[in-house]
Picture 1: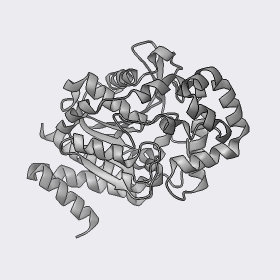
Picture 2: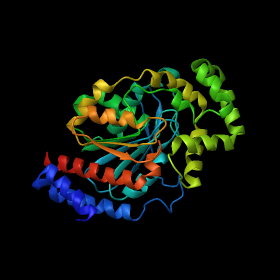
Picture 3: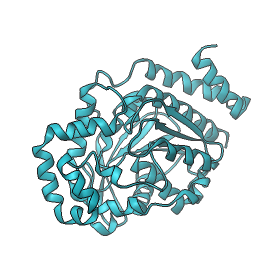
Picture 4: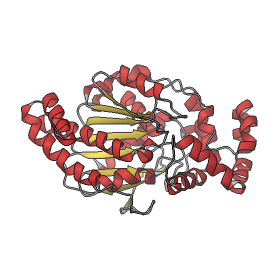
Length: 347
């Protein structure tokens, strides 16, 4: 049996005969995108849509882009810390024209407004996600896909709006993320020049709040060192140099003060008691086994706490698995979107 046949068969068995036609149609469409190795020939950062400004509940402007399509389901992609919406390059290339997709820059990232310290929290990111959904996907079923801090944003959203899981939200994708127990010094390593890593590790909060401008200056001056750090901590194996440079550009574009503002909230994150609600809908957990930032153990724990969820372990991949193993990640998202669409159609 072909790979596509196995996927369609497994989804049809799980969802029942009534949903089989929807599942098969969805997989066929998405497999066409995957087979083109979507995004490989498109320069990073060039996939754009007309910008939409969504105002958060504290008045901060959020930069949002919507790729329109005729699908019944809207997929909202939530990026990770010190990145921006362009990190979804391979997913955006694959799903463009096939699925209605929403991408946005989280507060203090990319083209969105700079948040004050008081609102630089994971809880606020959950409320921001809610506002984005209200503004650009006010009707119809929604699938949420988050990477790293984006996954934490989804967990915070689920804690704050549990009534929407299973009603509006019909599918969840959690990539290289956690709901707690994170060693925040891991987050520092790709962002801190090698000569500052020791002092930062020993006096993190003081250094971050008092020395963020100095860190920015040193990092700009030590570009080659920073790129090596990005390669080591973002990827698990050899990838094209363009991948490393692209991620490093996103990291370098994020002021170190942003890390200083969010840092205490990573250390205190503890939301594993709230993830069970995600079991109401199809949920996929994805991680690379060589992730040095949110290690595979976090994803395994998430999957164990979310009833009925799936776990995809990408052997040897690092934190940026959405790029490093984009074909595997997209194939898993195919199944998630198909299952969620079938669930929505059956309601």
